[in-house]
Amino acid sequence: MPYYIGDVIKDARKLTARTPEKFREGGIEIIIDNGVAEVDERRQEVILADGKALPYDILALGTGTEALRPGIPGEDREGVFLLRKLTDALTIKSYLEATGCRRAIVIGAGFIAMEACEAFVTRGIETEMIHRGKLPVARWDAELSSALLEEIKRRGVIFTSETTLTSIVEGAAYRLRLNTNRGPREADIILIATGVRPDTRLARAMGLTIGASGAIAVNFSQRTCRENVYAAGDCCESYHRVSRRWVNIPLGDIANKQGRVAGSNIGGTPRIFPGVVGAQSFRIFSWEAAAAGVTEREAATAGFHPISDVFWGNATAGSMPGPKKIGLKLIADRATGRLLGAQAVGEQRVVGRINTLAAALWAGLAIDELGYIDLAYSPPFSGAWDVIHLAAQNLLRKM
Image (cartoon, rainbow, N blue to C red; front, top):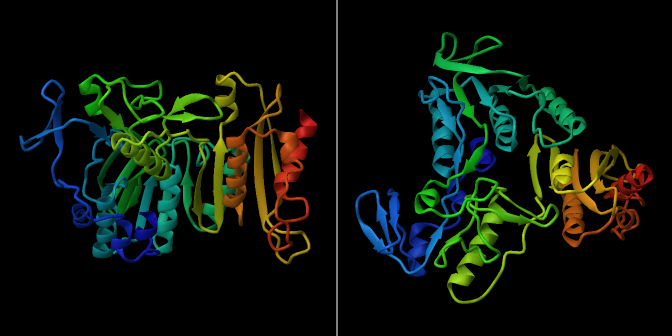
């Protein structure tokens, strides 16, 4: 959606995977512009907001997430937006085009906030990011986050850290004024991108088990604690193959896989969802960022003895013109040598390397195996010793 706002994707229809008409062609009835008021499990009926009752034999929940808000006066003013669903993106782009926005404020510094900053800057809008922490994308190592911070600053984004919000009021020079502990900031548009949480309101009302992550607890078949109730996507948990814990990672690829598993089981073909290793990525201007596995804190909580190292290398062979740097952090278990996590930022081919390391995490490879793993070599793509090899060997020396 940020790429649609930034006009990289120009046709909004390309953002719709399947229209209601296409669903109906396959025999699936779609009800839109309505909501679920409650579920009557005794009668096995879903009660819609308009009072209509729909009977069911099997119920599947895909309630997704709800956006977090700062909870300050004025956050519902015209010109203040969330970006959680397609209609949000459509409304934001229309607002930008209708009002001729000159300045934008993005509240938050996670994936969506970073991509939104790029979208606004691409449109020629002066952009400021307001964050309560010190560095963007706090899940990444501070050294890697600092490199991303330098990239957004180089592109003209103003980064205001350690900021507490107090209110949003009408602006003077611009449409809106955001009042903070660091003084007022004005803009024509304010985007709130402070994260999401699983939307479990319906599940809680039904008395379904909620996991430690705050999402709906499911088994490997996507079944909840009720025999005839399933859940899939951002509203439910996934099994993390590294930490061996149930977690909530709201990403579209996970939701798609869980939905297929739930549908297969509902349709009578047994299938399990084998879990995740937390692979994720985003782009910010000319830099890529990606990660997989767990952080040191998560590893320690899971009972491992984490050790880590950040290694800076090149995306291509050093002999190639204009080598592109990559910062790669590896996390391993000191007791067993097993790879536990990986994070990377850089100018080129970052996501491909994290995908390789995600496969290594899936397979449970150790750091010494990564140091000599067979990877395709050609100077335009890597050195004879890839940055993965070098980072693994560097960490192995510390263990």
